[in-house]
Image (cartoon, rainbow, N blue to C red; front, side, top):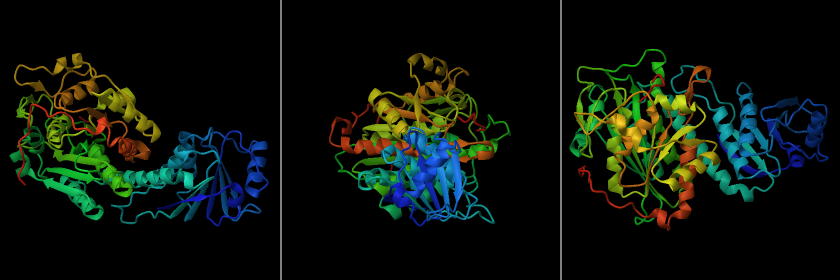
Length: 507
């Protein structure tokens, strides 16, 4: 979809040649003398139109207006959140139409948040999955013009919004692919293709390389599948080599049966979304390639299937992680933390300024926060605050949960350094405490996206979250490139070996 930013007021919109003119009407709407303003004012006075978000009024070929269709949408206080709701309601109504060009006119006082909301809201609501359909539904809408009072003042926000929309759609498409398509091998191929076409660096390791490195926890999970694992390293280098990178680690379980601790069959098809963390990392790199900020970012994706097989790891097995810590497997459906712990140890070699892992990790987080906010855990208050602010700005919110040491008591075992599960209570926190053991040498945050990475029911599909949050956070780091936050974390005591070469109860 082609987006264009344009200086456009309601007077100019009256003569705009477009299939659909979408006019956002805020509270306190001030009408001018042009045909669009007069029509909106008359509708408001007759109470046929309300400025509440989501309220719509359609007009067909109104007199004095060039557009064949006009939609007035209530925009509330005009904030990004309200604009997002208004645009999504209006563009959703256009999915069955033949409109190819849409012009959105934002209220004159709209800020950067409204511009981002208009672009991303339109892209999200007009997305159509077609990859595996024999007669795919065409996406008729080809061009979207966003009209603002001063296009020059909103140019930067518009560029960031376009990049976010591209990255979110990239992640959604990967997440929606069926598990026999989106295998670990396919994720490696997508990362390689992305790197080659956008000037990134990539390494893709298979089972032999991962065994040589010493990732015993990751290997243990992958043993039960005929699909070979992949460990993907992406590098975006927009700053000098002296600047410490941010490392993003994405869980890439391309299908999760639960392994020997098998899941219930109901809704197990949704476990193709257990690679939502991996998809979000790839989507974020796709967006970075558009914006080219002056920062360094590393992406790490451990990817495999979790399958029941004669070779599968079992409850009671002891795995030795890359860090050297031993792990007793009490539940094979707590596999995500096992592949992540090795990737988090591997991240140390990059001397990162911060490490953020993203994972559809626990059904407990869905119980705690539902599908509105992702769960956030962090060892560093500044990092947590930056991620929360980024989520709010991107309309991709998260909520911080605790990391008290007492939550790790249940992970104690007589047979290894740590068990991979504890009891039912505070399951999302306990999972985070498990990962915390492997992140002692750098500032770390964990995003549990089990409730936000996809939707079920009639709206079933990947959301692309939290690409918006991650991109907003990374772009904010560009200005901090020469500051203290950019310095590498101190080297840890444990040095990894060098390499040569859900049902919603997801865990």
